Length: 124
Image (cartoon, rainbow, N blue to C red; front, side):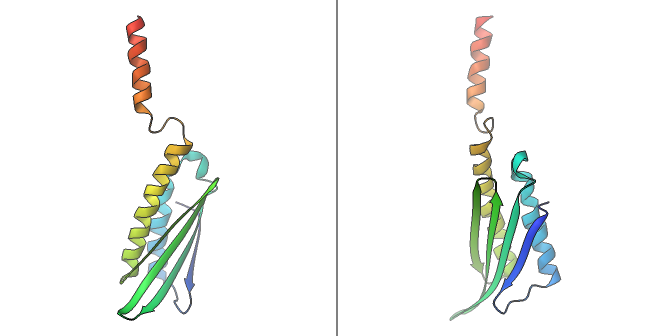
C-alpha cells in the first residue's frame, strides 16, 4: 500500500469515509506495480471534484503519482465518482508498467537473454 496518499475535495465537494476507503484501496494497490526502488518514496495526491455541466453533474478525479525522477498523472470525469477512480487507476497502472520497463534493466528484455542462452549452448 502506498502510505502517502493525500485525498482532497476540490471546491464544494466533501469526501466521505466510504470514498476515502475506496480511493486508498485502489490507488494504494498500485504500489505492487512499481519497481522496488520506488516503493518507499512514492506518494499520491488525489483531487476529487464535482463539476456542474449543462447535461448534469459529473465527478472529476485527478491523481498525481510521484515516483523517483518522474510524475505520473491521470485525470477522468464520469457520472459516478467510483467509476472515475477505477478508470484513473487503470491509466496509472499502464503508466507504471512503462516506467518500470524503462527504469529496471532486466524487465522487458526476455529475447536478449534467450539469445544469450542459445549462443552459450552452441559453444559447448
